[in-house]
Image 1 (tube, rainbow, N blue to C red):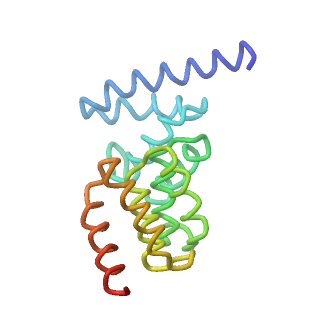
Image 2 (cartoon, rainbow, N blue to C red):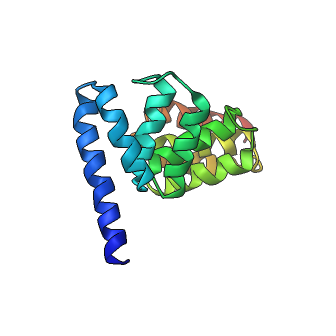
Length: 169
């Protein structure tokens, strides 16, 4: 990486950090231009948080299409939360055509980085046979990983999967 690229990356990080201070104070109007500049410089966190702002209408009119575009930009740079958001959009067909293959890909990437919600979604894919074939053993494995990662409803999902496994024996 050249000197110019390092400076550009550092500038994006600095803009994001300044914007985050304002965002935490709910000064969305102040955070917005800093996130926008940071995002243009390729800062994935700024891109993700612009997605959040557009999704929830923080300082801007809510716009799911723009939210998705920002989440996708951040996901393509490896931002794990954005990978999850993109996967959800492809699962539900929100702002994009439903595409379970793409959803599975993004959930898999986010899960590999420790995203418990993505782990739970992979468990559901295997439990119900979405895109992948129904595989209760893999469903159980992903649900157990989600539990271990602190997934909010992962224990209930694991219990459901184990109940289904018992029923089918």
